[in-house]
Length: 327
Ligand code: UDP
Ligand code: MG
Image (tube, rainbow, N blue to C red; front, top):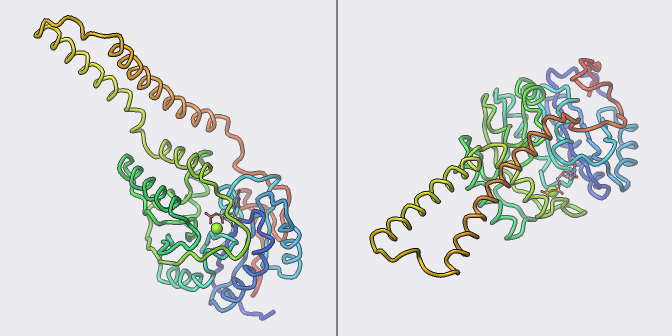
């Protein structure tokens, strides 16, 4: 090991869920790039309850290389929880969150380090191409961003990904002030401000294994995100109420002026009733969704539970710092 003291430490947080096929290659590629930087580094792998051989591979890597640190969850808590844990435990002056499947190319770490050197604090990686995403994923993703940008007062970059980098100050904001249970981490990264920039990258096809995000999961995630970043759905009740009142008024005036009596027919009544009730139930359902989110926040259950760690002491939250290791 070279005894060079680097001024700054780069923490690379990698979420891992059943990635035994991709991990060795990721480690090789990432280490190669990181060794060429003028930064010291730590590779923090967050094992999100993998059931395959990922845990074993990570154990071995952490024994061979002290820069490899591992946080193992007690069960699967999801990709975002893994990134949050990585942020909590990382000690770097710059922190990068990326996937283990090499869809986020490790070569980008060079450009990220260069941006940090220039003084940028938040670096959003923007996908220019996604080799893995099918038509449905692309169309639904575009629709989701269009909707959320229209109804919430923040602006999200449509092609932003879970690949981003933040400096210490921005990371502290994420650690302390963005701890919601129902959340959208990459959204927070875009709205916390600070000196920010974007870098383009091409999302490659996964090296191995398959995506863990099903369309169903993505749909649930999108609904929660819209509810968390916009109160507009809550106002739908008011609009629906006004619409019903106007409709009632129009029917009343029509009846009075044409002296046609009530609009005739059983069908009309049934259709109107169904329509009104449908509106009412949708609004009640939306309120229910917000209450569910409130309830989840109120219960305040942990975002993740750590079973064990390797080459790490305690998380930054506990205030214990590990002595810096040399490259
Ligand atoms: N991942 C995770 N926990 C999960 C699902 C995924 O830590 O519950 C990790 C996964 O190992 C990968 C990253 O999150 O490193 C992104 O997942 P994936 O590649 O399945 O998503 P996609 O790239 O298809 O959006
Ligand atoms: Mg992927």
